Image (cartoon, rainbow, N blue to C red; front, side, top):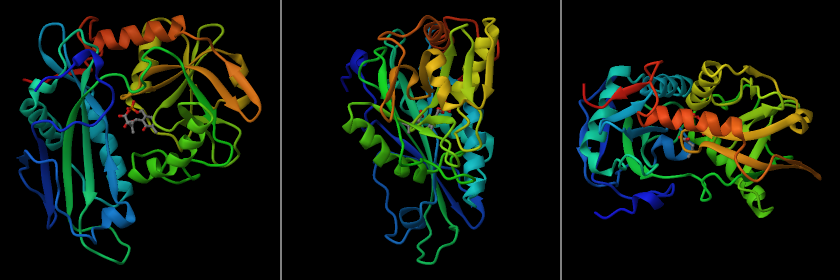
Length: 336
Ligand code: PLP
Ligand code: COI
């Protein structure tokens, strides 16, 4: 295995192994490690036709002291259970989830990027309904799979701001739908609007609230952060956006740094009032947004990452790789 750690993007590559648990007759098994990245499913599996599929995204970091640590994995366990509950899937006990993450990361330890490269091991838990059925109902049988892959920046440019286009015709989620949980179908819904944004030279689509198309929601793969001219941090409150672990953590870090930080509805007209805009999430960390296109209007936020987002980024990445004190106890060591 020869990996160019400094030039990792966000791409799939086969690694040594993955872990899989089966749910049968109301119980999870002990889980097994697989070296193949293939799965065998009935062609009538409910996840393939009816989308009973939940996933998560989290990271393991090689820290300055040489230890590998996970960032707030219990938050992902809880969110996966919220998603599963909405899809009428089984509960994954939090201990089972965290143990599964630990087992698969240990198995693939040589794929955790070295300290100082800026990379991380991306961890993708997946829960799928596997019962063969043609009528629509929740499955009886499930697989809980965790795959891992070493990753670098999600967007090629790293700190170079990306442009975003507000999707004027499509929503990623319905009002009172599944926008607040991590259901595979949400991402299917965002493919076309994201392609339309790309066709206009933008990297990402930004969505408005699906009821009134008045308030800012989030990007297809990340939450929205605005920094007002007074340096305060603002992020949307909405029942149809994903409850991002990164955003929740940044809100706390912003407060720790003495900044005003709030979660509230953000009217689209406020786009003109921000000094900095960013997209945040596990995969994108904080990616600066340079311009937002809304119909024939364009809002401009500069061609480098602004100082407030940069300070938060440095704090977050410093904490994740063990350079800043972990005052909130967010980092869970791989080995106990
Ligand atoms: N919003 C959406 C739609 C996402 O897919 C993600 C990524 O998981 C996020 C926000 C960020 O969430 P988190 O910070 O928990 O990764
Ligand atoms: C993440 O940030 O972990 C995500 O799941 C976003 C994405 C790549 C779908």
